[in-house]
Amino acid sequence: MLMIAKVALGLGATLALATAYTFHEGVIRVDVDESRQGGSHVHLWFPATTVSAGLRLAPKHYLSHAAEQARPYLPVLREVAKELQKYPNAEFVDVTDSRDHVHIAMVNGKLHVDAVSDSEDVHIVIPAETLGDVAARLEDAAPGI
Image (cartoon, rainbow, N blue to C red):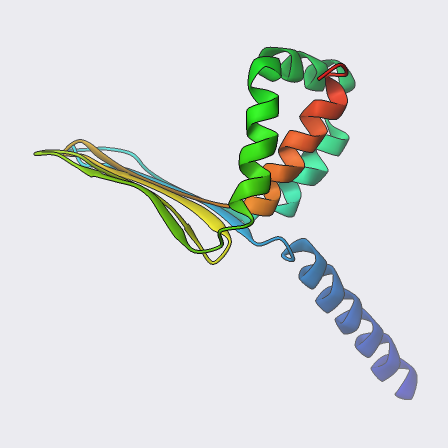
């Protein structure tokens, strides 16, 4: 009986540590809602760590191709990701017209992009650390930047 308790404790601790590591960077959230009749509603929540892991596991030729396509923007992405981490709570854009509203801000170290219109609502939340990881991986795949 004591052995079963030790095994259960070990498995529970392993699961707790794996969960803590998986979610240590935070969660990426993508919510898209179409306002029309029969419109789509897409809500994705996943650990930001999966993006970093996915970039490590992606076949090299696909990552090289993506890096080549993004090459002109990689220095800007790197600098923006680095600077965003300096402003954990800041508002960057808040534009409203008669039908649309766009709001871009950092909230608790996460980039929030909200676009609301008559036809659809889009809300995206990405940890700033994840943007830095993406920039670093793409730069590694595109030497010479």
